[in-house]
Image (cartoon, rainbow, N blue to C red; front, side, top):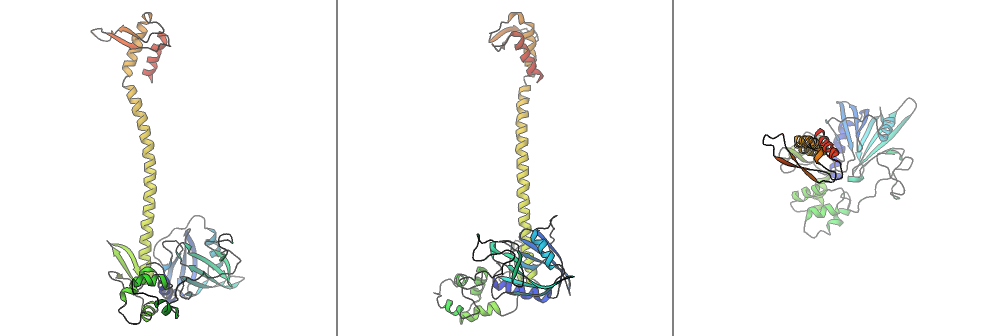
Length: 368
């Protein structure tokens, strides 16, 4: 399931219940799109992944192992400088948007400050932005005035939320206004295109669970009421998707983080395997082409060597008959005394070479 506002709202609530008060002890950046927080909470040490990958953007607890690069990237160093040892005081969704705010109370030997790390889960525009007093300290993905004059993301400028979608906010009366335009065709597609914070899978589940009556009330009840019922849908034993509420054919999990971790870890491992396979196939293919080229050259030399004895014999027969050969001849007839019957054989000559040079030419071919 895409990380829409509906899913993130429940993810934030679940994480807040277990992480608030936790101390951030370690920060690594395993790849260019992800940051991993090690937090020590009342229930023990946990790992929190914040990913801005276009396909796997999320925030969740994880049990997967991630390696740290030999040299920490700049954004990781920035987070370590400002957040290591900080206490997580709040974790919440911003309005009904795909933005999670993590509030940290940071105390060092000389300073004390409250800082906020924003995770914007917006596909290829997903980002992590660290702020203090509303001013950006740094961002995982920065933008300049030339790239986006409406929203600049670099240190020293005030942080502003992304522009809202041109869709109805389901928490306001705009939802009824939008639903008044529904013509009775595909409800799930209509909800996806007109209601903010609802991805297509969520819209489909809302439509499938609708049994008539007040549609706006049904939508709000689905989005904002009821308990989270995390589950994972498997296909041929492989995790295919996860849901925040019960879905047909899906198996329940202990938490929404666990459901996310199962799906995204499987997806990332499959991609990692495919990438490694592609690299290995490329290396093997290049090596095979190289060896095939070497083999072709060896076969050519082997074919040349098949006539080695003939070349040696031709050289010796020419040497024995130099008196009968003249420069300019294209061939000569000599007696083959290597054969018991002593037949006459023809030897091809290079008319530009002397008889002795022609004999040496055959000796060189034999030696080669």
